[in-house]
Amino acid sequence: MKKLTLALAMAATIALPTLAQAREVTFTTELKNYGGDGAYLALYLVDANGKYQRTLWLSGKKSKYYKHLADWARGSGLRSSEYDGVTGASVLSGQALNVTVDIADELIDAGYEVRVDTAVEDMRDNRADVSAPLTTDGVGKSFPGRGYVQSLSYTF
Image (cartoon, rainbow, N blue to C red; front, side, top):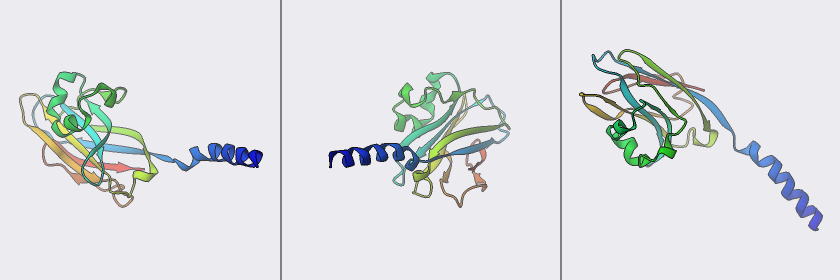
């Protein structure tokens, strides 16, 4: 019996990684021509209740400005562990940001949403400038922004 239990445990350990699948998702955030400095963007996931879950990407190198990405800042607690390894340069007016990340399959079609907060020096900050449900139906669709973001789209 012990050998059977051990064999089953080993088989489950080997099979478990195949159960937790992830897929590459590419997000494209296009900015409007707004006539200002480069924008700081926080691209992040929230659950079905709007609660922060994970930072996907953060644009802008100077961490002292991250507090202006208010909803993301509140959710992440501005902990560097939340954005280490997922930061890049700010995005210029009229330009696009393309980010590819791995997202667990279980989060897709499960009520999760992608949000983008934006901020530009000496200009207005925008909480949830754009948001989009993370669904298979949303693939390839364009979601309009309400601040500096012209649109957000994603593909699998």
